[in-house]
Length: 103
Image (tube, one colour):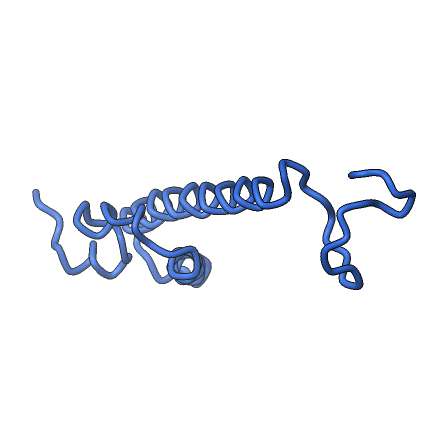
């Protein structure tokens, strides 16, 4: 028995066509879609099968967002010559810690 396409599309990403472009999603769009999935699941508005599809899509989006955050962290490390420092709101381009050593 085939499942109707309308229920798959309501989950946003439950169908293979919608799930495939995840790599092309910007971070903000992926987070927005993930938030919508969480709201739908928490609200109890999805039948069991759709909940399972939404959960799968949510995991896919979560991994995508984690990958993008990791990529951003690596770019920051490159920009900082391999040294990732804590953000200090008062300092602009100071590459040394309070004691003068590079951190």
